[in-house]
Amino acid sequence: DAKTTQPPSMDCAEGRAANLPCNHSTISGNEYVYWYRQIHSQGPQYIIHGLKNNETNEMASLIITEDRKSSTLILPHATLRDTAVYYCTGRGNTGKLIFGQGTTLQVKP
Amino acid sequence: GAVVSQHPSRVICKSGTSVKIECRSLDFQATTMFWYRQFPKQSLMLMATSNEGSKATYEQGVEKDKFLINHASLTLSTLTVTSAHPEDSSFYICSARSPSGTGGSYNSPLHFGNGTRLTVT
Image (cartoon, rainbow over all chains, first blue to last red; front, side):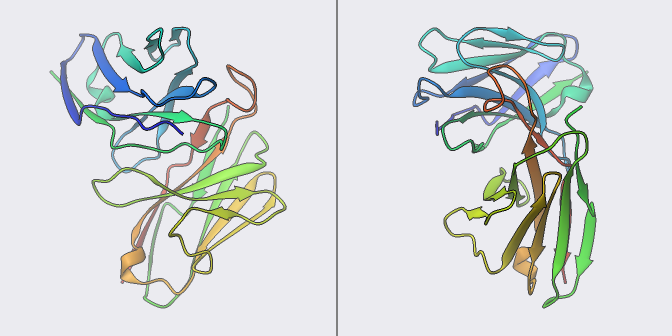
């Protein structure tokens, strides 16, 4: 299972795009990258996942580098409700999700 | 879709008693569920993998006799914290894999319950 590295914290102005990076240089070839977020005292919320192609859904976009060693989660127009801890994680053959320390995103008015 | 429900959301118990936490997949069947624990200001730590109809698989360092897991049906897994002590006070969260998604069922995302805050006095 891939080890992930994320900056501990980031700030973003409300209405601007939030770009959250994640390094997963040890990810294996068939291991998907997943992004979750956790708002205080709640369970993690699934955001998006991908293997090697960029993905977009109603919540966010996921950009994965060609070598798959890193990815960026993009929240196109951050709102105050997007303030949360964001986790990127890989899930290999074990099927488990192993969480790192995540990035605390603070969206400011 | 893909809703995971946990009950109770909060529980306070006395030291030495046992507490059962339920995790249900409401609109899908889950052969595998995962149990996590989270201490304040820390990340989620995987405790065990719950498999329907068979024994749970515990992560290294997690006491299987203390944290009893039962996965008797495709929609229900339970975690029982036996003889709870104050150091067991934590946020317990379960998750289950939704049946479909990008990449097929194996890589479909896990969906999480809203957690159970356990306080042992």
